[in-house]
Image (tube, rainbow, N blue to C red; front, side, top):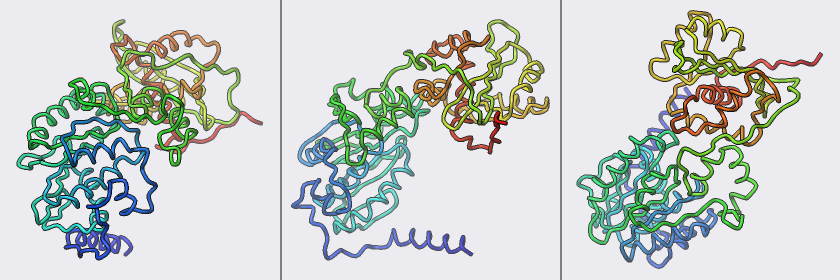
Length: 447
């Protein structure tokens, strides 16, 4: 019954979205307001976004003159809120202008445009067409919302084309194929829709040096970077994102993501990922135990190794207690893995899924997770924990030298071996992130 009521409620809300809106008798008059004042009047419950004044000023300038600009901002700092208000502000001041809003996917762009509907209503805007991806005024102006790779053909833009977050995640950012696709769509589709005098503002979180913003900057586009913490150690938005909070974020995401996402200075692969290790002299008395693995089947010396890494997790820190690696065949791997505790986590891609089934037939249960990103991307959460001292190794162990050599030498760029790094990443993601795939029994050495 409850599900039926919820379905009805969702249907009603979808219908209401497309019904003509009545003009608000107390509409906010955008014609006499700056964008900052309009945001305050249309959404008085919001903190004035003065920390994003470069974004606001760029949009105001785009109303008067042609602007080509890249602005990098940290995530969760209110840029999309400013952009959505800006789309309404521009249209309320000139309902004949045609704008475009682009995000990394068409569905996301449409969802964002839906969030702007109440703002448009408060501004007294009326539309002859109002769909999920399109607003059209009686003066034939409006907004079209689409995603990178989405349709813009036949959709002229004589106002502002604004691109808000063109990358979904790290896996897309690290993909040369995706970066090429995004660039080709931008140059062959979006730019060809611009009329003379139209503006383009890319306001986004940076992910990669060769992303869309990076390529535009290389071609001479003006760039404004708003780092989460400035050179004087002051946070960009202290009222909502204080320094202590940002420092905790930095601790958790690691230097690679911190530099790109939060500081607007993305790094290329090839540098140090894992810094000096943290050692332990005692193991925790209460812990959860698991194994991270990475398997390969060949005795050729040039082949990758099969690896198993055993660790104890005390709720905050992961203690590496045993590492096995060998260039062996499947049955030998299975025999070795049986000595390592379940759950056993492995990032699996392509034909490796068949290996999981074979291991299970040989009596080794594996929790397989899809390898949706490459090893460099998968290593980042473990690297952040390692560099923060939350992954520890013993002071001595037969396997320690080879393990540290590979981990600390890992660059993500043509490494000779990276199997132990991938197994470590699988272990940390499996047990260090609260073991979301199954409940682990807490063991204790206390008597």
